[in-house]
Every structure is written in structure tokens, then in C-alpha cells.
Image: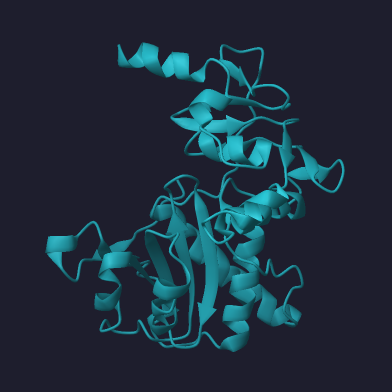
Length: 283
């Protein structure tokens, strides 16, 4: 049996679900889980301002993550309240003895950007850190052990690094086709909307740059389109169209509909038959 022990500490029992510290008792690596509303409380906690690697998560429309590193721990994340509004909760990792140095957190940031690129999370990072920091073989071995410890702690907090298994179309999974003229399909599994392999995705239309949102839709959609290609989950057919080579998971039907059409969509209507299924379930 491959069992492990995890310690949990709740700084404020009135907010036990929103603020917690967790640690393997055999390791110096300490994690802080916090929602956005509890961010200020983390700053006064012991070790929270040490060198850190951190993760900002969203699970609203689409499961996404921003991976960053900081030489002053939680203080760096406070700037994301102004710069990034996508996230609902964050997880910060430090060591009790502040043994992470700048090279350590650079490497850990690189490691986890590559790791999350293989999962169903959409990366919010603009820089995907495709070049590994220059570390020698001895340091890399130590840093990889740190990374695996952090990965275990993330999984203990419900963050899965396992890609969604492909759906076998021969099984009893109902498939919904995109409306004409788009070539794409989704299926539903465990409450998630799975955009299936071989579906075509599109870069956002140029006209979306001039929408009243100041180009937010265009930038977000273009980043998502490019990240799927850079992560090896899609291959380009031309400058604006790519084809998925793997299934991709979403929390709502509208996000994959926007990805497949290049502009805003009501996903319940975009996927043929999906709205009818919803109405049946509501009756």
C-alpha cells in the first residue's frame, strides 16, 4: 500500500473551506490554500512570504490555471487582484526553511507549466516557458523530487494531473454535433463537456477585436487556440483553423462552441440536440 499522511491546519475555523495550510510531516514544503476573499489573511501567516511557486485556479466556464513564482511569496499574488480577474482560488507553496532559491522556483514554474499543458486545464500563462532553466543534473534531481512532492499535495487538494480518457464512440455516450457549417462534436461525461478528437477549432474572428469588451474575448480565445496547438493537443490546418488530436474537457458547452466558431455562442443551441436534452431533464 502506497499510503501517506497529510497535516491540515485551519487559521480561521469560520472559513475552514476557504483558508487552510497543509503539509506532509516528512517534508519542509508547506502549502497554503485560499480563496480570493481570504488572500489578505495569508500574508500574516508564518512562512507565507518565503520564495514560492503558486497556482491560481478558475473552475467557472473552463478549468484553467495560472502558474507563477515569487521571491516574496503571497505579496506577489496580491498584484493579480488587479491584473487577473479569472481566478477563484489559489495554492501557494514555500519551504519552512526558505530553501527555495530563485533558480528553484524558476525550475518549478517551468516544470508545472509543462505538466499542466498535458492535462485538461487551460493555461492562463502568456509565456509557456518552453526552454528549461539551466540547472545541473544534481540540482535537477533534487528539484524534480520537490516537484513530485508538490504534485502530490496538489492532488490531495483535488487537482488532477490525469488527462481525461478518450471517449469510445461505440459505447452509449451521446454525441452532439456542432451546427452547420462547423465540424466538431462534444459528449457529456460526469457533468463535463468533452470536445472530441478530430473536432475543428478556430482562431477568433478579427471583428471580435472591436467588441465593447475591449478585445478581452479576442485575446482570451486566441490564447486558448494557440495553447492547444503548442501543447500538442491540436494541429494547424491553416492560419485560422486547427484540428484536435485529443479530447479536451470544459465546464460548460459555450466555451467549446466559441472555440469551434471563433466568436461568442450559446453552447446549448450551438450543439444540436443539447438544448432538447436539457429541457427533458428539467421536466
